[in-house]
Length: 286
Ligand code: NAI
Image (cartoon, rainbow, N blue to C red; front, side, top):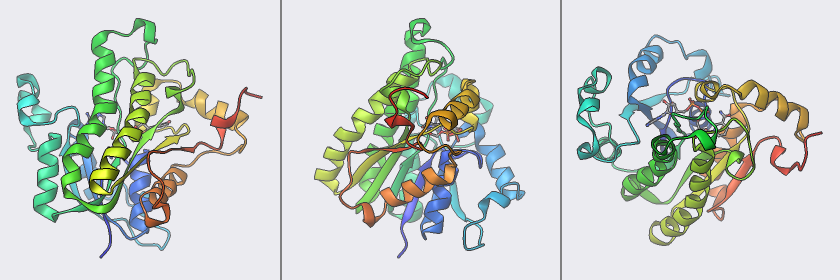
């Protein structure tokens, strides 16, 4: 039977999550996605109305099928964690079972098991502020949405993951080098995500035979990246300074993700894999 993947963090056809879904679909996987609750309606109606059809096209000419879209808010683990004002919010009240625990339960009810778990989401409300101007609340929110969300997803999905399965997340080099403009504690959140990748690889490997890796991706003009405000500058910088002077396409990250979660990568776990045209290897821009 083909593999089944749950990809958290797909809400349009521009980001890395979408590209990963396509690469996995092209390799024969069944695709389930988790979509942030406030973005759910527009994503589902755009899908239905055929707005993404051109970008659903796979190399063999067929269209990627998304078997099911699950509402998800990865900053809440269980229903008890959800504050009253969020529960009452119109966009949230319109759907249900979107905490991490409930989403995993729904997937279990619908499909029993999965083989692949992808975390392609991040959020930092103060990302445009330098770290020195970031509030405690903003910093913790960045860590909650961008780092703990992965711990929580893996924790709740591991019980329904088949042994031999694999999981990946997306990180950014601002975790280890200074990238002015990537603020609000987002650089800290990515550092946590990378460190957690190693510890989770150990725990999930020993207990469940599941591999855990993260892709350190180069800059892409996604919706999330545009909200930071400096993405065009980062893309230009990469083009000018990386060993490979070409645009980075989301598909290149998607294809690496498909490799990392497949048996060809059976001895790779706990790794940070760079998919950035080699920019990480440069010492100075030139
Ligand atoms: P994107 O906008 O396609 O993906 C981010 C997704 O996170 C969105 O679909 C958004 O709805 C979702 N999201 C935000 N808060 C959420 C929550 N609480 N619960 C559930 N979903 C939530 O943008 P992109 O850039 O493709 O981001 C995907 C991953 O790639 C992120 O981890 C990002 O940090 C990482 N990345 C992006 C780079 C870039 O230049 N775009 C570079 C390196 C890493």
